[in-house]
Image 1 (cartoon, rainbow, N blue to C red):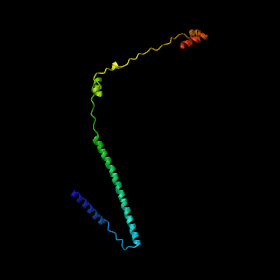
Image 2 (cartoon, one colour):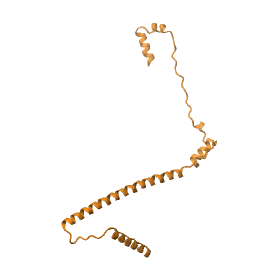
Image 3 (tube, helix red, strand yellow):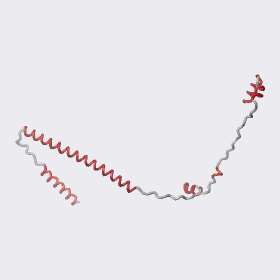
Image 4 (cartoon, rainbow, N blue to C red):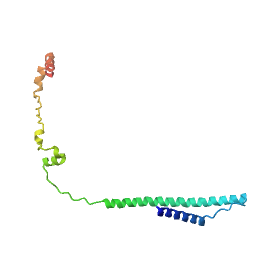
Length: 153
C-alpha cells in the first residue's frame, strides 16, 4: 500500500516538473490591453497546433488498434484451423443405429416391415369398347336418353 502511494506521488512530481519546464508561468501584471490581446492570440494559435497534433495522434492510435485487432483475428483463425481426419466407413445394423441414436429408449429390436401398412390397389374399371354404330341405334329417341341417365347414376 505504501509503495503504491509512493509510486503515485513520484508520478505526480514528475508531471509537475515536466509541465514547469514546458509551460512557463504567465506574467500578466503590468501588461496593456493590446499586449494581453496579442498574448491571447498566441495562446489560441498554440492551442490549435496542439489540437491538430492530438487529433493526428488519436487517428493513428485508432488505425493501429484496428490493425492489431485484424492481425490478432488472423492469428486466431490460423491457430484454430485443424485438419479433418479421414472418416472410415463403418457398417452398422439398423438396430444398433437406433440404439445409438435413441439410447435406452429402444430395448427391443424394431421390425420395420411389420409396422408398414399394406395398401391394396383397386383395379380400374375398364369400359368395354364396342362398336359405336350399334350403340347409336339403341340410344336413339327418349328411351336412349333415359338409359344414359340411368347409367350415369
